[in-house]
Image (cartoon, rainbow, N blue to C red):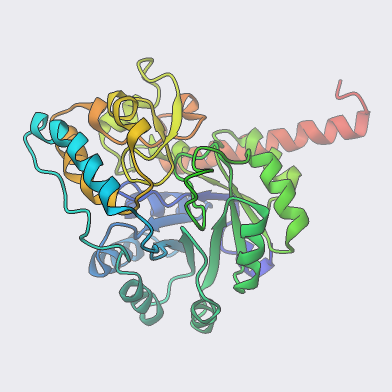
Amino acid sequence: MSSALTDLFPYPIVQAPMAGGVSVPGLAAAVSEAGGLGFLAAGYKTADGMYQEIKHLRGLTGRPFGVNLFLPQPETADPAAVDVYAHQLAGEAAWYETELGDPDCGRDDGYDTKLAVLLDNPVPVVSFHFGVPSREVVDSLHRVGTFALVGATTADEARAVEQSGADAVIAQGVEAGGHQGTHRDNPETGGTGTGLLSLVAQVREAVSLPILAAGGIMRGSQIAAVLAAGASAAQLGTAFLATPESGAHDLHKQALTNPLFVRTELTRAFSGRPARALVNRFLREHGPYAPAAYPEVHHLTAPVRGAAARAGDAQGMALWAGQGHRMARDLPAGQLVEVLAAELAAAGTALSGYTAGGTGR
C-alpha cells in the first residue's frame, strides 16, 4: 500500500463501516485513536445526518478516519414480486403492531448530496459499496486530498475498481457479515461467493492496487494470514460490532455469542440483497421467498425490524454477522485494536521462527 495511505493508520487494522447505526462516531474515534482506521457508515442516513456525525467524530479525535457511501442502485426489481413479498410480510407487521414501509421511498441513498458534502468538507478516506464510482468522482476526491477505496467480491470487480482510479480495493470474502458488496446483484449467484484467502490471491494477481481484506476476520492471526496472502491491511466488522462503543442494539451484540444462534446464512429476507446474518425465525420463514429487490425490500421491512428491536425480540431483527461471530470479544474498541495488534505481532514472530528453523519447532 502506498506510504501516504498507510501513514494514516499505524496498524493494518480497519474498522468496517456498518450501516444502520452501528458505526457511530464513538466507535470510529476509539479505533483511530488506538492506531487503526475508524469508519463512519453514511448508508441509510441523510446528508445532514452524515455531516453531523463527521463533526462529532472530529471533536473526538484528530486522527484520520473514513466515511462509506452506498452507490445508487439500478431499477431491476420486479414490482409484482415485491407486492407478493409484502403480502407475505403482512402477518409480521400485524404481530409487531406496525405498518410495512413504502418500498418506493428512494433508491439512491442521497448519494449526490452526500458526495457534495464530502467534497466541501473533505475527510481522509471515502469508501464505496455496491458498485464502482465514476472516474470523475474518484478524481474529484483526489483533488480535495481524499483517498478512495472501493469494494469488490471477484477479480473482475477488482479490475473495474482499478480502472476507476481508486487508491485501493476492499476484497470482501463470502464470510463477511452484512451485505455482500457485489457490483451487480445477480439472482442466479446471490447465495454464493469466494472465500477470503482465495479472493485475496485472485485479486492480487488481477490488479496492482493495494488490498484491504474483509470477511470473517476476528483474530490477529487471521490478519497475519491475509497479509501473507497479499493484502496490505484487514477490515473487520463483526469483531467491532460487540464492543461497548458500537451502536448495535444490545440484543444484536448478545446474539453473536448466544448459543441459540448457531450459524449465519446469506439471505435476501431483510433487504432484497444477499447479506449474511444470524439465522433467526424471520430469516428461516421469509428468506426462501424474498425477491431480488434492493432497496425496495429494505424499505419494506425496516418498520418491522425496528418494531422487533423495540419489543426486545431478536427473532424479528436483522442480526448481521460474519462467519466468525462466535469469536466476538466484549472489549472496548481501543483495547481490541491493541489486542489484535499484539496477536498479529505474535503470529509474525511464530512465522519467522518457522521459516528460520524449517520445522517451526
